[in-house]
Image (cartoon, rainbow, N blue to C red):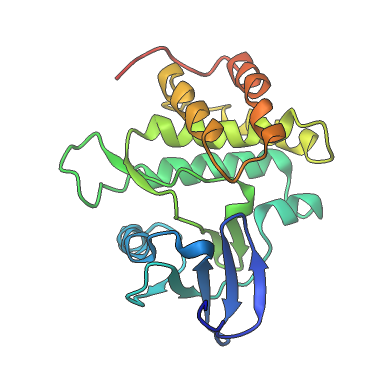
Length: 229
């Protein structure tokens, strides 16, 4: 039997559900026993200690349950769809959040070129609080080359941009803004991001089939280098 939820369901994503604990805290519970809540929480504490905007967390000793600060405000996507946030500014905010994150030293690696990566930074994982943007959902976090983080965010936006639905136009504008300035994005990193997305079990066949067009759209921006290291 799964554990009893602590309170009312506040929201659900592809892999987890978020429940109310009280006015200040929520619990995010991975479905089907997956995840590494302790590891994710440790990374969030680490980047928070270096001034990165993430929710505060409380240790639970659980692999599936992460208790974190309850945030107030819409997601970046909700704000864009409500016309309270300019689409170009949204893409620029994503770029600033990536650059800020990659100033944080790795938690485990001693290689100065290795940084903390989010690997799922997109408009639904940014909450616009009264204090500013906060980045949530660190379940994919790793340490590595910042180019991969940029590539993953670009691929997620590009997939939405070529999907041919009501989010395609906004996603294309955000992608252009994301890649407008300097970035470490490389062709090898893009190839790896596409490989990872194609192997993601939470994506539908239709979503995976969009990856070829997504790659073409990113390359058309002309912002990737060919460096291999």
